[in-house]
Image 1: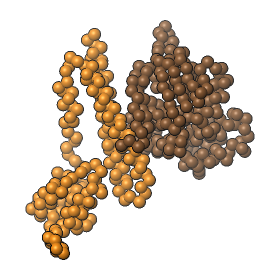
Image 2: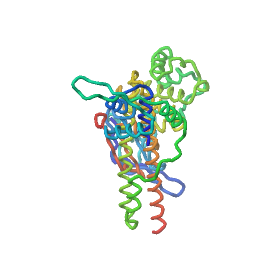
Image 3: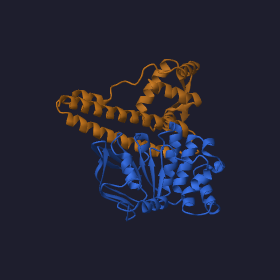
Image 4: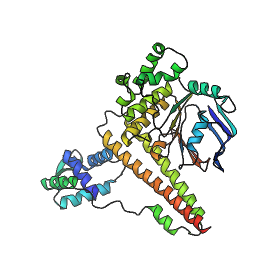
Length: 182
Length: 229
């Protein structure tokens, strides 16, 4: 869904061929989201069919022509509308960890608690890594995307923090339920 | 640097005996940035207070650079603390009638040095924490984040072996907190050993090592080297 808009956003700045588009994607959001050429080309196909993107052929020496993609007026309208609309769907609760929790042995809380502990440690290590990235970004004064990259690192930190808080909450509730039985 | 050997702390609360810390053995190396996490009541602040000589263990031993912090007189502890330990608290603990520079210089003034001698270093530290323009301001003329910067500069005035911070941003908004953590991290990058108590995983993540306490004892000790990815 958002690949479509990311591509429109990149093409809104400059006409590009497929390879440059991938490079542009990697430079702006690739740190958090990697795409392969297949995904990019199939999305471009769809965008062309919908009239949001068009292409020109550029001939090359001894090599097949390459396509230079550009955004159409309809594409710009679509992008502007998308940019100004909030996202209606909130994050789905389908984290792999939730599934594990559902299928854990309810009669063996020790195993659940041990898993929670391990998961918290992983989140903390992840947060440490993101924090180091954030500190490094402070030294990249010439990076035009430093602020947005930092904001993306921040959202990663906030989510991990929320996960840790929730896991701690699980721990306390499971222990309280246990205490009640004994 | 700091070493705890089987350190424990019991409190009496009415008729109840509370074991705030039990059998803590921990070594903090020079240059480390250690975060201590744990739920409230897990003994975090008590542990920090033992490291800073603000409290004495009821069992075991605590050493700072090989010097015992346990079993010595109050006066000896006070001197050790003033000269070798920098403390940063959640509520800044600045003296309202003193300027920023005077607050920063206070530990040395208490040691009997004249302000004329202390002031250049106090102002240099204020510059280092980004408050070059605020040296003559009193606490009530400063924002929360600025007050905590003054407190950090004060903690550094005696070139302490270790900087101890107890929920240093517990009273600040998230953006100001981040600036304080970045400041602590840059001090750590310059070699300052730091131990910080926090319940906030975002804060703890600035550390190169995270110890989690549970019921008065370390339950987990994660080391995250700078070079590790």
